Image 1 (cartoon, rainbow, N blue to C red):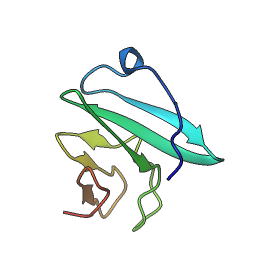
Image 2: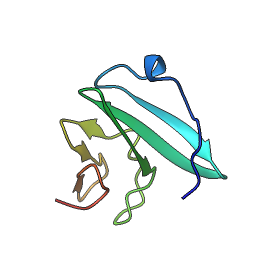
Image 3: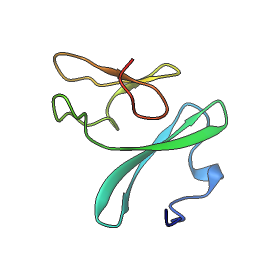
Image 4: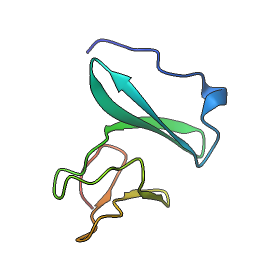
Length: 76
């Protein structure tokens, strides 16, 4: 997997997120307690933006029929 520099850690404080584009794809980068991870910015179940979702240690889509995602992007 190719690595891409998308932001400095200072740009995304704990609890925050940053929407970036990597290879033409929208990726949302999250900082949860100093741990950074990125997800494709689209809920695969309803197409909603995960960048607009609720972060509570997990990412929750705000669209109807809400789904919650762990750090690997799997539904929990």
